[in-house]
Amino acid sequence: MNNKTSFSLIAPAKLNLFLHINARREDGYHELETLFTFLNFGDELHFELTTDSDISVGGDTKDIPLNDNLIYKAALLLQTHCKTSLGVKINLIKRLPMGGGVGGGSSDAASTLLALNKLWKLELNLEILAQLGLKLGADVPVFIQGQSAIAHGIGEKLHQVKLEQKWYCVVHPNQHVSTAKIFTHPDLKRDTPKIIGDWKHHTLANDCEPLVKKLCPEVEKTLQWLLKYAPSKMTGTGSCCFVEFASQVQAQDVLENLPHTWQGFVASSANVSPAHTELTAIFDQ
Ligand SMILES: C[C@@](CO)(OP(=O)(O)O)[C@H](O)COP(=O)(O)OP(=O)(O)OC[C@H]1O[C@@H](n2ccc(N)nc2=O)[C@H](O)[C@@H]1O
Ligand SMILES: Nc1ncnc2c1ncn2[C@@H]1O[C@H](COP(=O)(O)OP(=O)(O)O)[C@@H](O)[C@H]1O
Image (tube, rainbow, N blue to C red; front, side, top):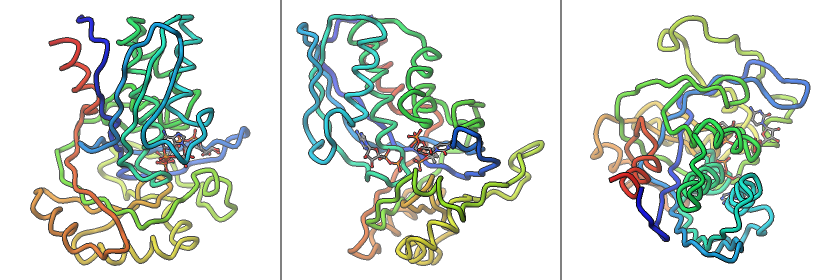
């Protein structure tokens, strides 16, 4: 292990390649089954060690009050858990749309936990970091474990899967969809049976899609527009929609034709989270 006192780390996007909701639990959370893949595109976080125990977060954070910022919450949680007197100065470059279903906030939190575990030399294992991460959001553990996976439970029980590398064009229809609003809506489909046997032999869908399309016509319009190129899907609780291709050129072609009212990006998928790949390169090589 080296003694780096400052470095940058990606907080990659995720896609839910399918998302089934099986039941609603008594605590309001939902039992789900979802297939996570990571993308080679995301926010960028810069970490600088300080010895004064202060945690500061700067950069593209204007819209989020410090105490609500998942980066700050993650750093504080880890500092408190490990009773360290070290601090950190964090800078965020935000590239992922907020409330877009690509997991930006959760990924920021996970990359913060992974980075500070190294910077503060805490040596917690991924299991402990994932348990801490779960306190911040149901999506955080998959970013901590860093392997494409089918998730069960509320998203924290992970079964690693190996997927073929694909190229995606991800489109943000300029709509913010609140995860809590979708999960509390009476019209959400919550009764998809659990997958029995191999998931590849099942009809796979995103159970949030019909409701989000109804509440948010721009999402419906985006999915329709993308259909010209390939079968289109929504990720998570929206609002981002995506199409999958074998080559970068095909995905880039969609992006180049995108109506100006929407934003998008092209990225390849990865079975190992790019945050883990980068951390290994920084600390273990
Ligand atoms: C739906 C998913 C699928 O990947 O993604 P997003 O679209 O938000 O990215 C996630 O499970 C979201 O994870 P995350 O965004 O971390 O959720 P949390 O902060 O824990 O919870 C946000 C809200 O969603 C609801 N929630 C979340 C997860 C779950 N399994 N059941 C739920 O009912 C809870 O009511 C909570 O109020
Ligand atoms: N660092 C952060 N980046 C993004 N969102 C954050 C962050 N900290 C807190 N949030 C809050 O989390 C919410 C969900 O954000 P995000 O993870 O980007 O969406 P989604 O879960 O739909 O992918 C945002 O609307 C925002 O209020």
